[in-house]
Image (cartoon, rainbow, N blue to C red):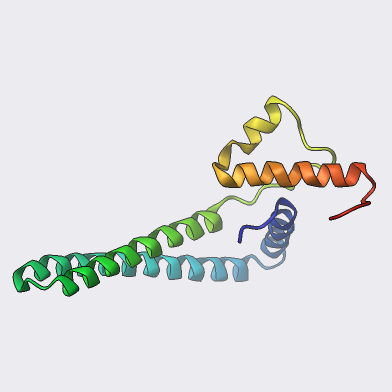
Length: 144
């Protein structure tokens, strides 16, 4: 489940403070987590190759069940690879200063800032923001 913008700002602030207070520990933790993600990527690639070998070998044995098992292994490894790459991109995203508080930008400024998200996430974020602004305009009365 993705974090809201507020939660992302809080997490970025915690990371920034950790880097300021104990940079050695922050580097140690960050590098070990990146190494863990690197191992998972290597495992996913190796699993994909094993699955491919199983699929190819199933043609020699003329066994459909072995081929299906190889395909499932390949599919699981692709899923693991994509998930790990997304997590890695989240970890390696630079920590910037928190955006200024106040009303969200409107018009072209908002479109430029929100261009990094795509698809359903962007749409859901816009709907959530609209709902939240309507809620605040009514003074917090009515259903949440």
